Length: 167
Image (cartoon, rainbow, N blue to C red; front, side):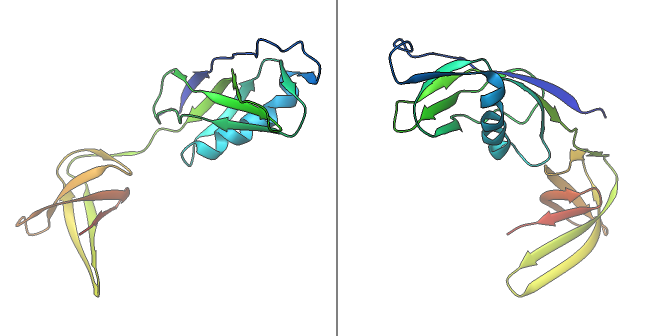
């Protein structure tokens, strides 16, 4: 499966009094590293930021900080993700960033695949063979029939060959 590209759009609200003294105008290139770091910090592991377009904006004096107010869902598509830009002790303002993300497709394990079943309990570690009862992606919940066909267990598919059953 190919990796999906996701475009994320954020809304920008500049302060009404941006022209007042004590403000400075920053270009998108100056804000891009801050926005990239903030977005990368909240994205799930494996998701890569390919490109960011940050519009220029006016900010107050002081150290700049960018925060992501809401994490985008980990799926393909377009999302509106609010980010806040704060300069020094000033009021945060909404920042608009166009982000292109690479969301890699998770490998799908087919129904009927033979897997190892791991059961961990305090003081106990059991392994067995089993068969997936439905196709599942790594990280998803999976039903597995034990090798003797006696019992269906539900666990998490942790890689293409292993299902871990939790208490």
